[in-house]
Image 1 (cartoon, one colour):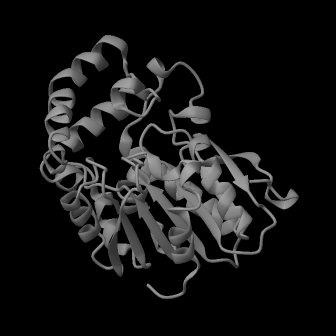
Image 2 (cartoon, one colour; image 1 turned 30 degrees about the horizontal axis):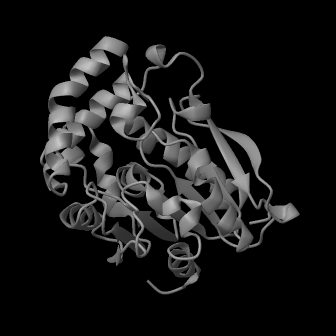
Amino acid sequence: MTARPDSAPQDLTITTTDGTTLAATLYGANASGPITVIASGAAIRRRYYAPFAQALAERGRPTLTFDYRGIGGSLPGPITQFKARMRDWGIRDIPAVIAWSRATYPNRPLHWVGHSYGGGFGLGLAWNNTEIARALSIATPHGYWGDMDKPERYRIGALVGLAMPILIAASQRLPGRIAGTGEDLPAGVAREWRRWIMARNSLFDVPDLPEVRHFKTMTAPMRFLRVADDPWASDIAVQRISAEFSNAPHHIVRVAPPRGEKIGHLGFFRPRFETSLWPTALDWLDQTQP
């Protein structure tokens, strides 16, 4: 795909209310459509979503990608010294991105494309998710390891329950090759992620996390894409997380891999699916009905 001059990416920074600087990239800054934000999955850099962001910009949408604190361009120093929890991404980082989007494009609808964490936990914890007009959640699970498809649930159960604490203690981070994303996680983020994965009700029973109430303030139409060969975001996992957005009109659409292909948890955003999987998703964002 050849980018038009007005869709060329521009790097920028967004500052959160606690003074953390987030690295971000804006595609199609001068496009006239809705401002669209792509929120990453856990431990995935924003650059992974560049082809999809470019496709949105080519359809006339200014599109923003960003790195959560401690990830990619939002890691200011040694990861072993970086202090953060996974909740910070949803409580502080995502609200800052929403606020920046509304301030920069005040007269546009704000559309959200969330992958995994970015379409579930992160979106639900954000106090200002009421600013969003439409949300597409892709490969977004509830989080509990026991909801994953077999046999992956047993591998993750053993990895997260037994091996992860040892790995974090030994290196003061979670190596990306272990997380399955390629990007290392700060220790505090990884420890909290582990607690949410191991708990039957994930983060929803955490006593010191009152921000889960914001799942109920989300009222925009939501579409959840359940990728058929994704063992993490299984049928039950997607059903459970979508139900938490109880005041948002939402529905689940099952996405099957093209013949001879695999999608998995990470694959939807790969350029090879530009003509087979992306059009339906992009068309839904352009609709005005749930």
